[in-house]
Image (tube, helix red, strand yellow):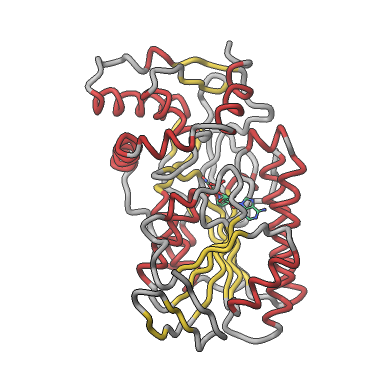
Length: 375
Ligand SMILES: NC(=O)c1ccc[n+]([C@@H]2O[C@H](COP(=O)([O-])OP(=O)(O)OC[C@H]3O[C@@H](n4cnc5c(N)ncnc54)[C@H](O)[C@@H]3O)[C@@H](O)[C@H]2O)c1
């Protein structure tokens, strides 16, 4: 099977079985498309916009998994390029090869715990990598209209809230982990390219996502996986840290909305209006998984183990999403209880996926991160 590419927009897509002329109206570079959120964005755009070429550029770190895209990989508007965004020459080549018209930038080191272990890796990918993409977009697009550089960021840039209040787009940045500091830096760089070079950018800052294909170092899949395996459920500190949870497919529809209708230079906060303490969330998951596996009530909850708190653990994040709701008409579609049940069902049905990603690096990391700190 081969694909032949010619200049965009007179673009030829030729597969051995089915050879036809494809003309694409956009060639979108989706960075980090093999990661958790990226695969949902690619799936949505590939189905909804057959006239867009989606170029998934991903370095395939421990968090990138092409198995996440098995149902999309044969689509005629999808291609994969293994690319490290810190490789300036490689980025230039991909921009040239596909005549990239737009960028949806998701590639990042994304796990706070790993950023505490290895901050420089986060600076390299999240700050330098973003800078290299911005610079290439500036070089490739010049002052020509019709392009967009969409930077996907996190609510963690705003710091930590007390028991009341919400993050708005005007909240001052106050990042407190190397991860959030690196994302905050990248947000600033993206805005700097807008003001200094008139690069057409848009940014969104989103709360915690959950759903299918999330790497099981993050809380929800980690807990589900451990319940399945009858392992202890590690909860940081006293479990009262609050996060706002958003169904990942709702994040993908928000990205679609902002990409098409967001105003250049603007920032949009995205949230699920679904605040939960970590311990409440873990108890909900225990209940759902026990029920679905036909185990006695309360059996998973008994295995909850409080472990030494994460360094600098932010107490509460909560999003005011009224700007995207009011101005762009987006809102989350999935109720938390339905979303949690759908998530559990997906992981129970996809145990081979779970088995595959929980081998190797993940296992070593898990031992290092949680076993030593169990109280
Ligand atoms: N997961 C969340 O809850 C959440 C919430 C808000 C914002 N975000 C942001 O959304 C984006 C995606 O998050 P995610 O949860 O899907 O992350 P993820 O860790 O699941 O995926 C990141 C992807 O980026 C790739 N990648 C990492 N370094 C790279 C590099 N140097 N070059 C190219 N590719 C590289 C990885 O291989 C992986 O496929 C990130 O920018 C993150 O900051 C995530």
